[in-house]
Amino acid sequence: MTKRFGSLVANDKLSVTVEEDTIHGVMGPNGSGKSTFFNTVTGFYRPDGGTVRFDGEDVTGWKPDEIARRGLARTFQIPSPFEDLTVKENMLAVFTGGIRSGVRISEEKRARADELLELLEIDHVADQEAGGVSGGQEKLLELGRILMLEPACVMLDEPTAGVNPSLRNRLLDHLETLNDRGTTFVIIEHDMRVIADVCDRVTVFNQGQVLVEGDFESVTSDERVRDAYLGG
Ligand code: ADP
Ligand code: MG
Image 1 (cartoon, rainbow, N blue to C red):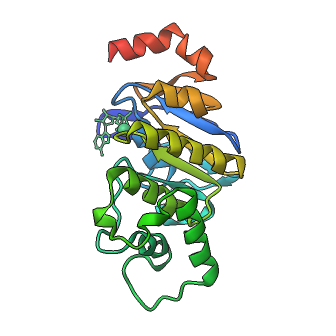
Image 2: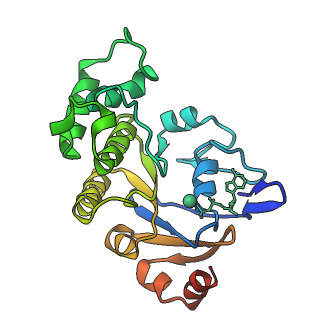
């Protein structure tokens, strides 16, 4: 898959395969094309070449909401909840498309929201306005909102950035629990400990291309990876 911005090739014939039921890490220096990869795979950008296949289907050129409904969801580096709605209302708003009232939400979906809020340990702030919760809780809410769609695969852009260590560890526990239940994750992550703790496989990007792919040990001991980070 290739994605250009003018003369800049942000993703240069990039080829990545994510296996079902894994947690797949994406690493690489700043500007190596990680976020562009996420944006293109999930339909926010249209690739200039190549294809995006999900679960056996060519989803190239599909709109983000079509791809999300097909089972491939993503979070953004910076969460943006509806600040005036409560945490729980935010969870349910994924089905109403926002703050429209009058859209009927099934008991099943309400129960799912309760279950996820409990799983992510933000049920105690369910009735607080999302604008007032902590940054870490906001991240968990963003993950919860995505999970309401029951995606087969979730792509997370720097999920632990700006999250304190105890919440970080809980977030990783939640990811592993969800992964055990069958959700595949792709995570962009700078924190090596996170990659080492949860990722089954890692792809390292450099200058819009795949530099190295493998398990954590083999990737981090690879000289080319060290050079790429040192070279900035
Ligand atoms: P990473 O997430 O690995 O830090 P990005 O995918 O954000 O890298 O960026 C890859 C390259 O593409 C960078 O050189 C960046 O400046 C450029 N880029 C990213 N998004 C845009 C955009 N919307 N318009 C122009 N250039 C962009
Ligand atoms: Mg990025």
